[in-house]
Length: 400
Image (cartoon, rainbow, N blue to C red; front, side, top):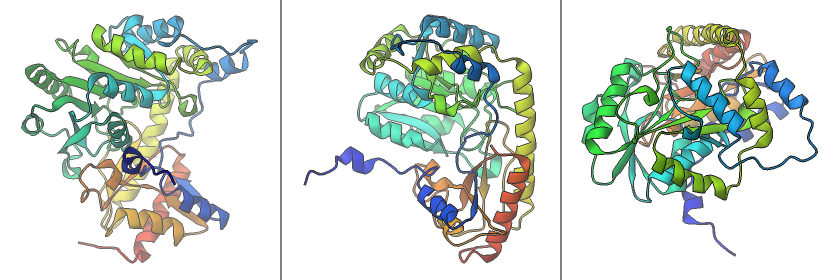
């Protein structure tokens, strides 16, 4: 019998989805499962985007250009200018989701065996993308005690060696919801210039910050034009996760030309998604004002509720729509499975993601879970009550 490849065997399970079979089994038992494990908002997609899909009147659903439709890339360039990022349509390569943009970036800029520094905890799928590209993640560790602030530049520099080729950040952060300050980005820019590295930034949550101004993009930091690659997506901005459309943006002609080869190899990004996304660019700012306001209510309901539970610690996230909580438990993987398999309260249980999968260091995150506040306040409040009652009876509870 043929055997699976080593790469296939090494591919990590997703902490976001690996417990799905237990959630499905709970539903089959008649239990209502509240899904806080995945960033799938219940926010309506802008009507203008849905109308564009309904209005498609084509006799052939053809390939688009490999780099994406020019009209869409022009629209993206205008959008970026509105948020302080001055790029041209040629700087934009449209991709099948932000995931493909990251994979293209890794494959374009890094060789197998190269190292990339990422502050942990980080988006779990970075592990999978690194495995696909054959590169190694080196971590600097942020702490829940200071709200997962970016570690000092000295920590990054201490990890740099001859194999280091890039630094990757997510701003605002998944899973932590942390926003990085201008000084953080300028420190990283100085570091990549000093050591001749790439700086990749996953900026898909740009619109969702809760302290005033939008976070600064690395594309607006001067002097790193040949170093910077921005990753973006429509999934979160317009609540269009299923469209699977993103982009990589860089002013480096060499990076663009190499990435285009990978784009041509997969032929084209999704045609229908580009039609919808181009229409979505006309979404009024009032949409985002309303969505931000709703997410703030959900965030506050989740964080305030969690911090009212004995032994739970949950910093207030400044952006995105995730929160990491430290629970008084022995093992988050065991707890997240147990709450689906063996617990219900008033016919309800909750699915959350064990934060172990968001670290590169195996022993970290064992008392932490990530939750996405993407459901309405009533559901979030019920989820908090489920967790409260679950911790009262969980066999592996460990109060300090």
